Structures are given as C-alpha cells and as structure tokens.
Image 1 (tube, rainbow, N blue to C red):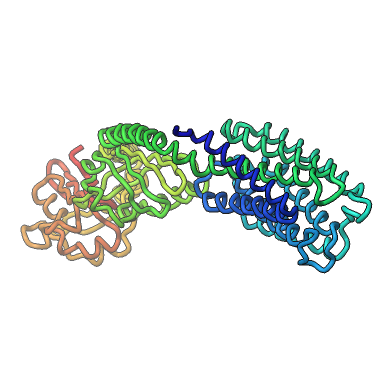
Image 2 (cartoon, rainbow, N blue to C red):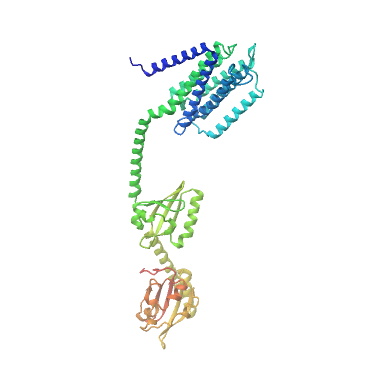
Length: 534
C-alpha cells in the first residue's frame, strides 16, 4: 500500500523519537549529544535556507530569524561540548552547560520577540550580523569569566535564577506570539501556524526544564524532544515560504505577469497612438537636453526624424537670439520642478526657423514638452506691429508738416520721427543735384555712424552707382524695396558698410514736387524682409 506524504512524515518522526529514546537507554550523554546536534543542524539549516533565498524571499522576518538561530546554534554547540560528562572543559560540572543553555534561550526568545518588527520591512543584514556577533561574544565572556549568575548547584539542583529565567523566557515567548499575530497580514496562514506552533512548543520545552533535579533526568530529556520539534517547525516555515511557495506559485506568477505585460503593452500602444497622432508636437528629452523621443507631428512640422536627432541636444536647434531666454527657462524648469510656458524660434531641417510655443514639465530625469507651431500667428503679430509703427510715423510726420514751416527742420524731424516711432535702424533724406545728377543727403537720424559719407556717390543715372534702391526709386519715380541687403546684388556697392551698422533691409520712397521727383526718403530696418506689400 502506497503511503501519502503526511503519513510517511509521521512514521519517520516516530522512528526518530524512538531512536533518540533508545540512545538515552544506552547512555543519557549519547542522547543529549545527538538531540543537541540535531537541533543545531536544524538551526544551521534555518540560516542556510534563509540566507540563500533572501533575494526572492517575500518576508525578511525569516531572514532575521535565520541570522539569530545561527548564533543560537553556536551557543548550543558550546553547551553540548560543556555538558556534564563530555570532558571537554576542565570544570566538568552541570553549572556551565546550564548557564549556556539559559543564555541561548534568552537570545532565542528575544530574537523571536524582535523578529515581527522586520516583517514587511527592508532588512540590513550587515548591522544585524554585527550586533548578534557582539551579543554572542559578550554572553560567552560573561559566562567564562564568572560574571553570569549560577544556574545549577551540585547537590541542590536548579538555582532560583535559572527557574525564574525559564518563566521569564516563557513570558517573552508569549509576547512574541501576540506580536506575531498582530503582524499576521505578512504571513501565509500555514506559515503563521507553523511559527506560532514552534513558539508554543518552545514554551512547553522551557517549562519542562524548570522541573528537573538532575541534568540526566526525564524532564531534561522531554525538554530536548520539544526543542527539536520547535526548531523543525521554524525550518518547515522557511522551507514553505522561501522554497516551496515560490515554486508552487511560479506558474501563477508567470501567467499573471503575462497578463500584466499584455495590459501594459495595450496601454503602451494606446499611448503611442496618441503620441504619434496628436496634432501638437511632442518630445521627451533628458535634463541634459538630449532627445529621447519625438512624435510624427514633430517630423512633419520641423522635418527631423528621431534617428536624425540621436546624440543631439534641444539647444542645438534654438535660434541664437533666443538662446539666453531659453537657457533661463530651462534653469527654472530644473530648479522649480514646475510646468513652464515659453516661446522661441526653432530651426527646421531646411534651415528656416519657426516660432514654437512650448509647455514643458519635468519628471525625474526627463522633461516632457508639448508644443505648437505659432509661426503664422507670430508673422501676423509682427505684421500688425510693423503696420502700427508705420502708421505712427505717418501720423507724426503729418503733425510735423502742420507744425513746422522751415524745410530743413521738417526734413530732420521726419527722419527723427521715423527712427523713434517706426523703430527703424536709420532714416535719411537726400535731394537731387540737377547739375551733377547725384543725390546729396541733407537730413538723417538713427545709427548712421558715417555711413552717408563712406558710401559711393549715388547717381540717378542708369549706371552701377545709380542702380541701387535710391537711384532706381528716383529714376523710375516709384518706391524701391531691398528685402535682404546681404543677398541683393544691386546693393553690392553699399553692402559692407550697411551690414556693419546692422542694416538688413531698406526702402527708398521718392519725394515729388508738382509731379517731379526731387529726392528720396530712405528707411533701414534691422531685420530682412521688413518692408512687405502692406
């Protein structure tokens, strides 16, 4: 007939108990040595299993117990060697082993009381090891140097200290059961029952040791039986928690992990769809400014794909004129950890710049940014601003015409008003000398810095010196715009001096008297393409 596992374990336990009892009939010293060595082996096993499974153990309670029982096993080992009749120590009496026994039980009971505190907490093993090593060393020194109270007196038996200690130890163990039950949410029900059963049997063992008169007596034998059982129950709890339970639940954990990964994949795909299909620009960068990810709208608007941005920083694409304000914003973002809005010009793949409105927020070492292309809005705002400036100039000049009667004062005032209200870099007025057909400057304002004296003589004839904006406007009787002085070939004679003074675009407006062009009013802006049709 095939036996089930529980029946087989029960039969094995009975056989071990009978073998131990048989050894006591042969000689109590043999029984005691075997019993103690069995409990020592179990205690060492508790430590070995708890230590080697600490990385995936669900509860640090058992790891703490493992470290404690290793040191208890050491004291029990010395207790075994010191037992009466072993002949290892010169004293050879019953007091030394009894002192070692009580010291071991104090260490065991206090450890069981302290262990529930670590349930569900992170355990720093190095300090625990050091403290137990020091406690064990102090105990051994106290015993062997005669500082530990006597526990057994030959001819009289157990001392009051020893008996009281057994009751104190039992009381500590009762407290440990109550504390353990308070922490029961950290234990599986079977494991909790094994631990509580172990402590209760330890209490029974301690009470048995209060009754013997002879170290070879029956109650001493009974106490050792209970001790072996209590140690084994803790060992079983560790095996169940740290070895069997993980393997029993491995398939379930794998299935749960697969389900969780599936849900996570679905959420990730959903976020990817939103990220890539959003109408706004999205990017993720680290706190050093290096790109981690951009969406499709980013690629469509600015032209750069993610692989082209690898190893590049956000600041590599910011317009130089906006660099200072952008750096200040990033510093605030890192320091204050708040959502910030800012606007700057950002370089596209084709080399042009677009106005981007950003909304950025930090998260750990990453910065998340949502953005919108507001280039057209910016252009509209700039266009309105330019028109307002031009209207302000026209209005102020009209008022000056009414107010001033002297020609020279009126012309100088017109130039001043153009610079002050129109925010032009420079403005000047020149009249035609009919004898030489050259344009002579008679009024100016703004950043001139000798420009009018250094440029080539401006002619109104169709010659190289007359094909610039001034000569053309006078000769053709219409306004002439130079959108970009740096690139306009007709400005070659005057380009170098103009760029030195920050002129980037200009317009020449013919001045007419009774239908005849007699001069020109020239305005210079600090940006290209300032003078549009409006």
